[in-house]
Amino acid sequence: MYSIGDLSRRTGVKIPTIRYYEQMGLIAAPERSEGNQRRYERSELERLAFIRHARDLGLSIDSIKDLLALSQHPERPCGEADRIASEHLATVREKIARLRKLEQELERIVACDGNHTVGDCYVIRALADHSMCESEH
Amino acid sequence: MYSIGDLSRRTGVKIPTIRYYEQMGLIAAPERSEGNQRRYERSELERLAFIRHARDLGLSIDSIKDLLALSQHPERPCGEADRIASEHLATVREKIARLRKLEQELERIVACDGNHTVGDCYVIRALADHSMCESEH
DNA sequence: TCTATTGCTCCAGAAGCTATAGGTTTGAGG
DNA sequence: CCTCAAACCTATAGCTTCTGGAGCAATAGA
Image (cartoon, rainbow over all chains, first blue to last red; front, side, top):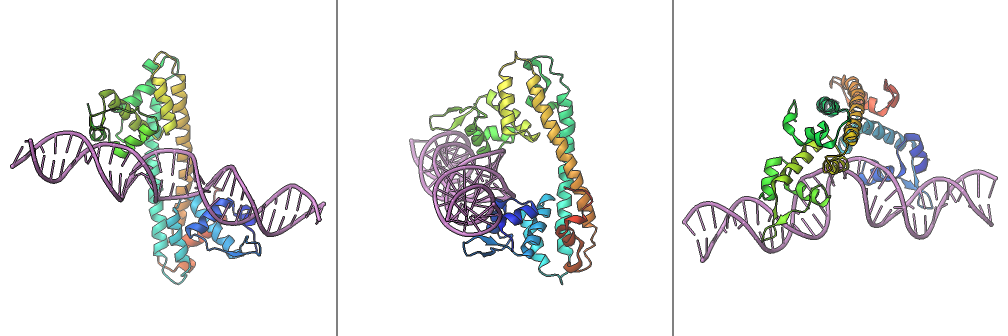
């Protein structure tokens, strides 16, 4: 049996976050000690590690709920799990593409050397005037 | 004079968001009509366009506040504006790097072809077992 | 047994909006 | 001038994913 602190240390998920996940229905309400403290079994530790890993990868709470529900039915085809992960990959790729554009634009903006006054600062002017952008966003 | 709806259409910032920005102190409380509706001048439109653009670039509300305050003092050196933009560029680059790692890992995970059952699905196993990862994250 | 640490619940806040409810004002057509 | 739909108002709550604090109870090691 693990206390909530044990679980936290072993998974790297902070204590209030574990309680939050319980509230959100990601993990079941565990047994309690006589003094009303949470007591977890090994299986909960594994479930929490799964959640942690999926969150690290940026999956939403809802996606994780779906994946956890799926994993309760090992006999079903796994196309659904594949779909969730693939969709997530697509959104990650989109984010990368958008950030690349920002990077380019910020590079241009930052070309200002800081050796003059705000009145003619490229940063300020670039932000004020959208038409200076090379790509639309 | 523009109504809040005009301002919204011209800048692409939604009406509740404009009111929110007013509350947050990004834009000043404007004059009101006899019937208590907001009436904006052209300068407010430009200010809001600036904010919109900076938000599109991912700058935080606080950074934008700083930049707006700076732009009120055109005689000052612009090193500060430069610093804000540079810092933001650095965080954008970090985000890109992290997302690239995720992309790689998700690519490996998604290699599952969906033609079997959840019990031996690579997606589920990969999420359950952190040690399968190639890079630590 | 004492006490430091850990745990409990409940509540508020962070960021940046978005939505809803319930009402008022505006402006264009008749 | 009148009407009526569209636009506007305020206030408040909700979203997401946690994080932190207050005030008190339980546990574990010396």
